[in-house]
Length: 527
Image 1 (tube, rainbow, N blue to C red):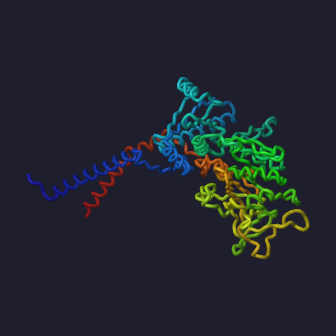
Image 2: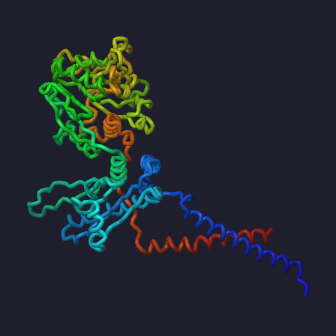
Image 3: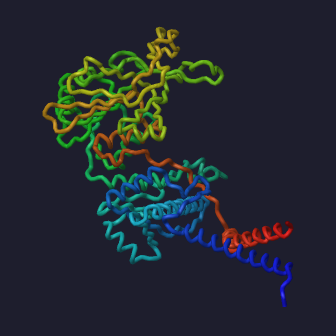
């Protein structure tokens, strides 16, 4: 029996529907299959704070691992969380579990990106005792529970889950003994696992333990106190970066220790003697490295604002004794470059050298250090000694001026000058290269102005500080910008929600494609 024309059209339409559905489903399967292949994997991270997304610095680290031909191994040792009995214990257990989950998420992504160059091993200390014990013995033991161990070759570094990978606020008890008083609970503030793991890996990539001696005996700044104007965070970070830090009295000893790689002096209030300056300069000529940071003191008198001119004449620099200020923008006066006042002594660096290795990573990522109580650093120009080269690496903005003392007291006069010619860009940090006639390597002097690395500003300037010391120690692999800290937040999915997502992927997507084919067929039949 011959088929009518309308029957042939209906058959053709059904066949077209079947073919369209099959092709659409085949395309869907092909896209899913290709998406599972490492070469085609692309992450679309919609999680809060993009916790599955690593920073550019971590990607550079992975490239460095591949270039060096080494493998990064990360071992996690988690114990069973205890049964909480009090609200504080319940909060602590919740925070601890949250840190574990964030760490697992980051390490999963790290292993995916690293491929053969990254190994992640997770050990259940309580569940798989034999495997955990064997690995711990290989590492030479662990100093604490719940740790992440980062290994490169035979070297490894241990990171505490709660101390190194997170920032937890542990408030003091508020009237804990008073009747009806509530116990203060810990708070999970910041997760910094990526920063800690990447920093540990970079440290393990370099060999040796450079020795830094901080000069004492000059009424210098406090190094160990946990106060805002101390340098305790810098000292802790340097040791975590693989440096050994000690103290040295150059005026008393009259020599540089033989094992010194770097010398540093932070905010001295006394001048260096001619004899000590000569010893220090000859050491730099022979390839030594020295960091000098002079800040401005509110106490008047030359003894509180030394210039270290005995050393400066030899190295081609001088420090001004006046306070360096900069106009602060005022939104209420948009046509003005800014206003003065006490706030003008707090500076934001506006000129970061993109050429020097210390500051190049900062310039590339638009990181601008902050400082206060600064003094201008000036190169000697034509009077620079032979074999000495002066290079600014940090500069102020164009509206900086040198403030004199208030004639009615000892405070600085924060009023901006009426003469616009008094404003100019001024040097805030410089590097001086010193080449001795018989030296095998170039010596370096890094000049800093004001309070740059004190505890209150270390979060803004920590990368600059570590880059500076790593560059001086010739650890170029560690000269970088560390990963940004991010807060550990997450969306919890209950099993029903997970099941709905799976149902959508398995059935809804093919159904939508089939529905689209039916819609196209219906539209064609109408026409």
